[in-house]
Image 1 (cartoon, rainbow over the protein chains, first blue to last red):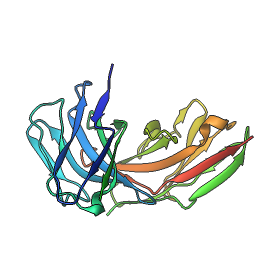
Image 2: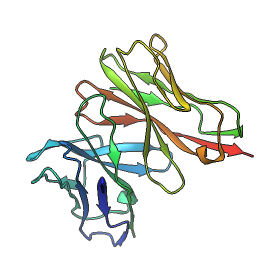
Image 3: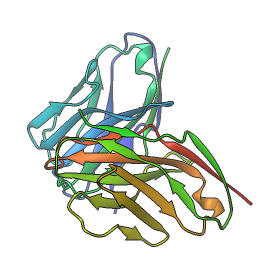
Image 4: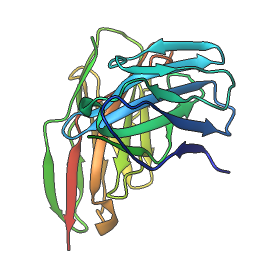
Length: 113
Length: 115
């Protein structure tokens, strides 16, 4: 059982480049989300989705796009990378109920130079 | 807006001692959930324990228990008989309403267990 799979694990971009962080889950979870983790800041919600075709913004959505065409996949797109987007990105999924814990992927460490 | 505060940036504890990691929260919503996650140096996020705002009893999961004091808005994690493998970052988090709006995380506590 793979759980939540994120790719790539590491990525270096130059300012202005675009890229997509991939996230897939095989637990049939309706709820998926993206967080970024910065030193001393905890995790902050970027975007989330409560089901295929439905997405919404979290606390720090600027500079990121998402889509949810299937239940399994929830890619995060950086349209024009900036050094401020250097961070560790986590994808997470759950059944979307208040008591449902998030299942996290192993993270993507992104550096923008 | 909801907020989670973890006031201990770092803690050193002797192996086999009990550890209490502090977490206070702020919300006016009567329905909420509180979570603790562990992040070892390898980076993955591991779910430890959950407490619902309407739960009458404190949650327990093996060596982990949650000291839930609703009136004080605190949800401290207690680790009994600490082990070297407990060394990690620990995050407290809160969900509101139906849970679909995601979790709000605290900034974490770095726990180091000393032999």
